[in-house]
Image 1 (cartoon, helix red, strand yellow):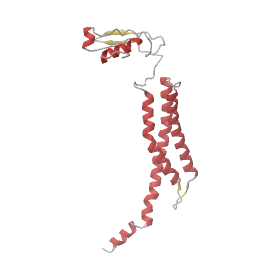
Image 2: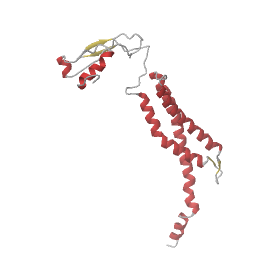
Image 3: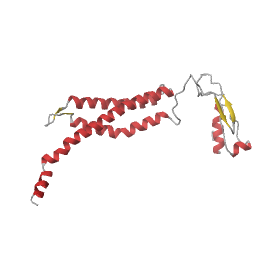
Length: 201
């Protein structure tokens, strides 16, 4: 029974309390380095999205990609600083600078949701597709609709051109009560009709 107070005293001693602090430094370093690697991946992904969707000329998109690149570069700089300022622990293990690691980890976690939001935002409303010019999809077959064929001028599957088509389903389509939709310029009036509003009102 006399051993209990001694154990309790040891657990609450400054040496025992600092033991967790030493281990936490290594755990925070592990977390921090993983986020640094992910930040570099996010920067590359942002550039790939911009190149794929051809958004490099849009100023707002360039600024948002720059934000992601800045995030990645700051974290890489803090990682290098933590390594340069590393010192030996009492056990002779080279340990990264705890102050830089703590600050870097905090900065990384605080800004991570914003970076992920930017990535989602620059993707736009649609899916990201990697077109293939070698095997473009030119035909769609359906038992209900039959066969729809197209000959893309660019040789790739998807295009934005006036001579495309739109597939509209619903009761109004069957009754023929919809305005014409034969050109991209017809879309505003078509959507306004569906919403029951007048353009320019």
